[in-house]
Length: 79
Image (tube, rainbow, N blue to C red; front, top):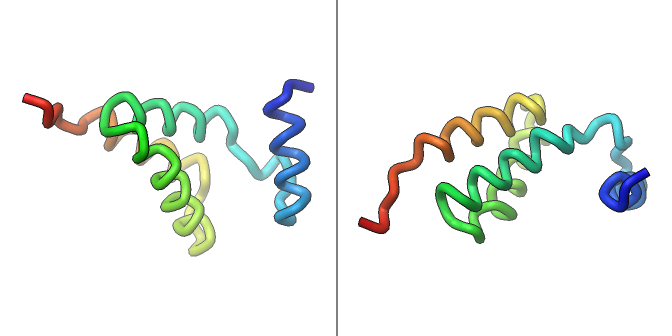
């Protein structure tokens, strides 16, 4: 078990979420895409937005994929 797996198991238990309910790979990919293509502070805020969407019934992996696609299309606003 990796440190991340252990953390997800422990934090999930504290929140009543089973590890198999956490699409870790998709969420990490989404966080990377937002941090690298939009802005770093956007990654944790976006993770929260996904949490709200999931609480309202969205599929977590699908929500992460949707946001990754959006982040990868995000225009470079530094020019």
